[in-house]
Image (cartoon, rainbow, N blue to C red):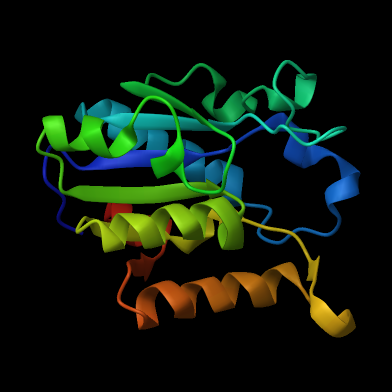
Length: 186
């Protein structure tokens, strides 16, 4: 795929707290490896990397600020980055410092979004990026999520939720949904 030299990689919530069994069954065991490949490629190319961390305010959350689970996973913990955003909601565009302002100041119009959870913070950030006019690419195999229950006892598997995210984003015109290999030209 063809990306500008300024295309930013947004790495969403790759945090140790998501390894807690309380989250339930997850999909895509290769997500972290693919995230690592993207981070390395972006660092090697000198393109901007934005690291995002969820600082949960929910009592007992595995992602609570100051808890061991709040820390980034080893695959990205020491990765170079140009901006570090913290947030308490599901969009990196509502974090601190202001992601949209930072991207705009640098003339960045292309973003690649990866991380955890596919159907939550990754999808929400990608949707908002699309709404804000960015050219958004989402390598779906550089994300993962967990099974989830909804109203009336409906339960979807993590794989079903990831497929729904792919359809929502690509079919809805928010983002191009591709593979890590397609992004890297492998």
